[in-house]
Amino acid sequence: MNYDTLIFDLDDTLIDNYQSISYAFFVMISNLGIKYDHHLFLKWLEFDNTYWSMWECGKMELPKNFHSISEQNYYLRSRRFQLFFNNLDISDSMAFSLNDIYTNNLGVNIVLIDGAYSLLEKLYSKYDIVIATNGPEDVAFNKIERANIKQFISTMISSEKIGFSKPSSKFFDVLFEKIKQKDKKKLLFIGDSLTTDIFGGMNNGIDTCWFNPKKLSHSEEYSPTYEIHKLIQLEYKL
Image: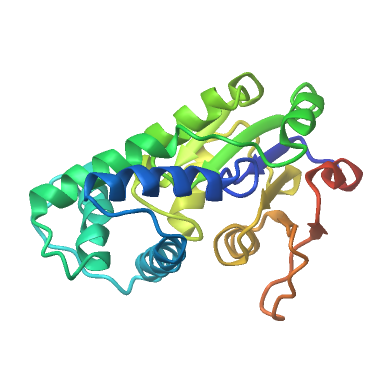
């Protein structure tokens, strides 16, 4: 296919999000006086994934006193600590503090997915490289800078900035507005998540490439255009 714009998810597609989250979680619970426990961390991962999935599916209601998208996002990110540590009776102010600690440390321990740097280095002179992430904007920028891949990227779209998350069509509407190429046939979306990246691309008329390093199976409702198990394989799909 004759693509000229490659849209990459960030976490677990280019950046090893497990490494980022595990460090941030360690620092955050240390501030609570809790000793790091791997089983607790795994519970956090499961909880956090479920929490944001519920939000993306419209199954969470928010207080109606928000004046901006940033206030809404800050509430959402802070509220999860109260829910997860429900036995600690965490106040609103403490939840805000924990969120700040956690978020500020997400961009500290940055590890690129194997092959990510060399792939971007090869592709950026031939393709417009775009990042589309459901993560916080400041954290995403910090990750990109620390990973030393900023020079390869022309545009970044963050759900926190625009107020809509993948796979919402509103997220993709903003994405189409921001990127240079308006012909969807020349776009390819690359991501690890079937529910956000692949499903979002499918529903919005974009070819998709599922990055599936664990070689998982998927149901018939998902039909990625391509599937790769290593990032370097993307070169042979273009």
